[in-house]
Image (cartoon, rainbow, N blue to C red; front, side, top):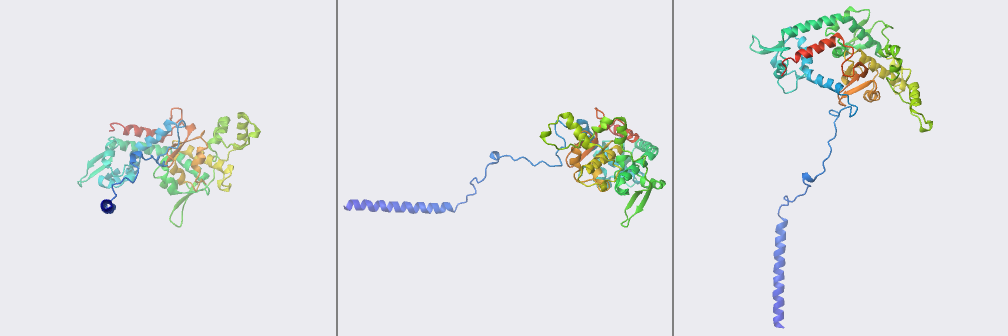
Amino acid sequence: MSIWRLLWTISTTTTSSISKTSNSTFSQFRQLSTSFLVTKIPKKFRKKRKKKESPRTTLVQTQPNIIPYFENILVRDTHLRFLTKTKEFLSKQPHHVLRLDDAGKLHQQLGFPRGRKIVRSLQRHPSIFEIYRHTDGKMWFGFTDFMEQLLEEESCIMNQMESDRVSVVRKLLMMSKDKRIPLSKIYHNRLLFGIPEDFRDRIGKYEDYFKVVVEEDGKRVVELVNWDPTLAVSALEKEYMVDEDKVKRAFKFPIKHGKALDLDEGDERKLNLLYTLPLVSPYSNGSELDLWTVEAEKFRVGLIHEFLSLTLEKRAYIHNLVEFKDEFCLTKHTYQMLLKQPGTFYLAGTEMNWCVFLKDAYGEDGVLLNKDPQVLFNEKLYRCSRVNET
């Protein structure tokens, strides 16, 4: 018995010592950092989330509805932004020159990328701009002699087309809600209609058509003096006299109907035509129409069609339309409204910066059918600017 008691005592002591050792080891382990443990799913095993599409980059049109030549016109606008904006800005400077140090701070006014050197943009158009050192030791730039000749040619075109531009302004006033538009809005959009830069001075010659009123806040507003019924005829009405069927197909305002009617395609088209016609003249008073009725939408669609027909290239960007939003009784749903009329309008660009085209004004090759003399001059300028372009 004494031998067994001795063995039991030894085993108990050994077990107790092992237990104490393991407890002390575990307590030490608990004090160690666990930062080395992997607590997140490795990046390569995570599910890839789709990036949220931005209206800034999302195209309005998708395949197969994209018309390449309309989209390419906007690409051309991007390439020529510097040339167009710098030409306008420099034309208003004394002696048509500007110091390079000052120009580098005017990226928005001159249309070159922020943070880039303007010299690089100037060197792309050697036949239009020239850089030289002035007597003050500073670097300046201005127009070349060739460009000065082009400016004189453009000035002659402006003088020849003055009566037509006056008619355009009169028609814009006749379409406006109160027959008055702030002078600044017309000035901001003058390139869209080919209106000369000094039209604010020229407008005083036409007292029978316009009256400039200065409001309390100093804003100058041009008002219509006389209503001319011969001008209150829209481009659609003129087209209706030539091709009635074409105008009938211009817009669609479909009627919702149940399947119980069992209409075939021809009957459905006739039913929709009864709802679509007659159209509402853009020279009528749209402010008197109930905002969300079909008649009001017909008015707004017809007004935008007439507005585009008055432009040089039969197209306008979103900011051009927004500028006249109040005067033309447009709503924030203009984008969706134009998308519903794909037979007449084509919206190019992105959802945030789109441009609307009159499709019938362009041929199948994407070339404008009837070109204004100012458009022909602009094309000549663009061709000359690409000579020796790097």
